Length: 636
Image (cartoon, rainbow, N blue to C red; front, side):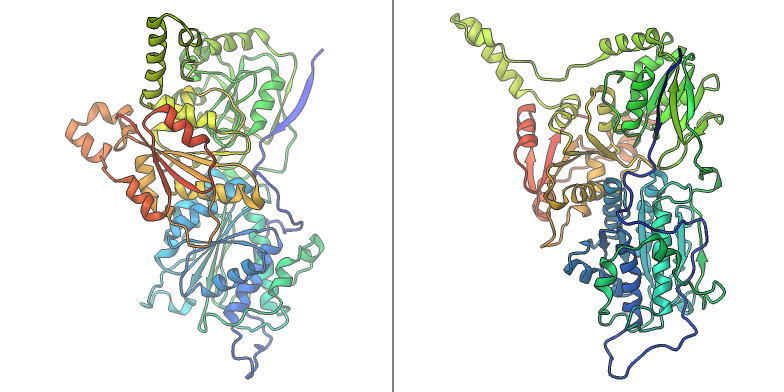
């Protein structure tokens, strides 16, 4: 008799907001436009400023709805937001992180959002500072990571007239954002916190949180609020800030919030929605798609698939092809050496149906499979863009397996997987030889052991060392370098939390992302170490993220750099067979001779250079109380 197994869904985000009641984003937001009421001012209260009161209303609304992290890049036009953030930190209501580079700030917030499932706020000033947030915004869009961008700006009348540090910031992120708004210039000083300006900004905060988390059947992603200010750019923090931020907004309170009429925007422009487009917006939640027994089926888990992929494969009795960045490479059905097996006509060539979780990006074999028009592809919606490489993929909210598993099909894959598994562990000592009374036998065993200890680290040994050192309470982050493909090809199954920026698979912001992951995962003295594995070019591309301001929390973070002196990932791509040696080296390999030890010293990191597996294992597993830069030289 057919059996029905539990429904499996790919969660769009990794957490839900701790507070209830953010309004859905299916209706347009409303401007924080000045009310028809007279501005409340007092000749005896010269320290109050509309900019600060507006910043307080906006940030208090965000914090009251669950925001716990604010990342600030300093600047003049955004000073009201920054000073309010500092006051919230002083009261213990948020964790504040200051980064002088806006690109670093954006990716630090991205890492926090990846780990917590809640958006972190980024605050920056006007001009090119805003443009530096675009890489993080694009990655958040494509990977489905919540992110809130608050950009200070000049008032609208200064745009396009040659004013200093002024450009057209509204719409800069339009193709990537779930919601964006060009807010009205604050005009009112709000002594009691109940002015229409503050009420409107609180509603904008509610809209922004909901949109960033993917409410309204959208994937999670970035939100952009452009916040123009006139002078004075800052004043005293209002007395109601902390109480407002410490509150939790109920559904009723949010629904009853009074919002000014859309017609009174006072020059401010609102651009609601945008970003993922109608093709990427799911319909109303649908019933789980039944995956019936019969067609020869495998499960493919791409980036951010999560444990749901493994559970579905287990419940349905399907082979599991799980990328190393999927968070699903564990369990009894994991397929080792899947690339070769997918190319085998007797296995990959006989696949009739694929159920996809997450977004596969690491192997051409999987890409070719998902592009086949003779294979039924079912893709479970999750964070980020939907998968539809063959133009006929069925997108579903959830799947459930029905019927009796095809044990013969599963057995074929598991036997091939067992044969393809690679044991990367160093050879065990010859205990019998070491204990032998025969000098030659004992000497041979000693020499063999010394040889193991002195063996240089290669790429397989490097990825194996990181994998073995990482446990469920740790975090492992992979950069988009050659080394992640080595890990994907060789490593076995293990249930650990893995992060990687595979939305656009760029090398931007890798260290900053890992720092954000570490900061978020280690709050409240939680145990664990965050380890980042990346190549030397990805490291150098983001070395500004090594800077940490004095007095800020120092995360337990090990940055492991596989240093092969350039971009060796291109050696395995088509360009290597086309380009001449000189051109290949000059514009693709791009050799570098940076002294990583000096960089570590300059930025205050502990430095280690490991050339043997024994030394690497010792550094990775020794108690770590701060930031470590671990360089592992590798051959090209």
